[in-house]
Image (cartoon, rainbow, N blue to C red; front, side, top):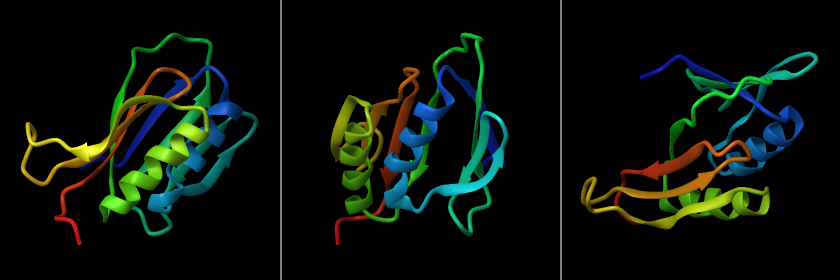
Length: 124
């Protein structure tokens, strides 16, 4: 639905490490570095990307949801994001208030942005 999302972060190095570790389970890597403090992250064959850059501005908090192919990827995201310094904002589980198969986890990133990974598939 989107081509890319670009937003500023307080500490680029910390945020870059957080996103790479947290989103490793869904194949996200750095596709472009913008020296000195910017990067574009995407899946290797992805058509959309997440762009981070250093800023002193105080942007409003975002909610960004990434698609997972399996519930296992949602679980892996959650635990990787916690170990990367993220804050729990909703553990992995079904969210029937959204739909019967909506399986997601939520983490607050180092800037307080709500990062979600969601799987719409039934459990295998």
